Length: 462
Image 1: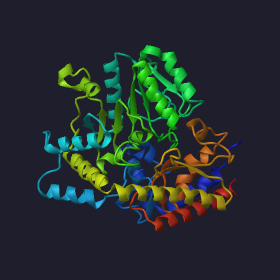
Image 2: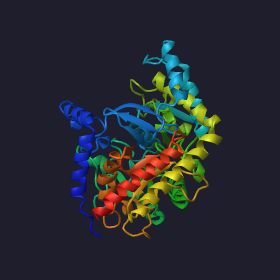
Image 3: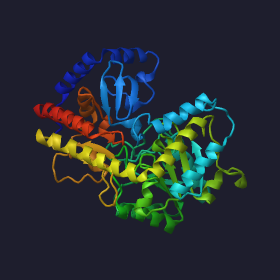
Image 4: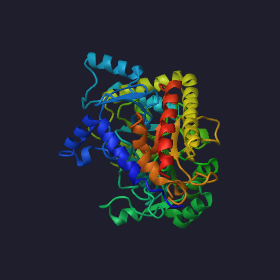
């Protein structure tokens, strides 16, 4: 189906956004003099300019122009308890008042205590902390290649594992998922990245067979993030585990988005799948920057002294930063103790958000479907991505479907929706969203009203 022409609607939205947010517009215009494109994270720089935030609490943020904005982006899908949860901010405030919290460059007991907690909650044997998901996935791949003595890495098309050279292939949908996603990468590296198809067991088995004994690892997200909030099927994820065992390869689960969001641990555990290594971050830090590689002791020891530190996973200046360790520790302790309250609430709010979005668009005659639910498992989900398939029978189970402009209105999802919602004081970036325990029934009503108004505008341009 031909994508509708949204140029007139986008022009109106740009004008409306600039007219109601002059301070954010001016700051952005000035920022472009010194910052590339006006900021330091590409996808947050929505067109024509992003809201510049001055405060954030719970489910809402405030921008430079005084707008209170219902925020479903929630710290890049990291904030399980909402923005600035007191359980974290009060602990940090007390630490700073006592003279502890900024960088020391020394070790303290907090990282040991946090490591014990992460291992206990995730079933891991060893963990090492770093500062980002990109670094974590890079180190994890290095560990598997060193441990196995093999070089080929396998990932699923649509899977985003950070801005690191080991896996920058098959992220963007451009005539499939075979292209390299960045200039400057050596082909000697990218040729060792095999892109398989998500949720296609036969394709996965065939690709593993074709690689054979060169396969070092398969890295998968239990639920694709940038690929459309699509959960793996039980069959697919369990097959990945089985194929790795059969071939002597290692399984890495990238749980940056899913870790500690479905229960106090990794989503893989709910699938009955134990990875050799797992990546955690986002929710792990309770709003502070921390990420981790965790898993088997023998694999992790490739970075240890007993092997001569074969893998240079030595950390960076801000690895295991005191404030991040403290925030993560008190946050995970809270999730563990309050799991019976936190996770049912997250599931209920997530389900209500998905229903509110779909129902509001349906009222205006616009077909909308939310991904993010994990229907095969006995668990709720607080995640969503809003999609606009042309046919109500289209099954949104692979990124090839979600990003195919002949099957889904990608232009509406990627370029129109976020700005249209923002002028209604709702923030949903690239159609991705996450519920937090701070969101309320009132917030669901606000979301539904905003979606209804946006749907009516869209219907007039179709």
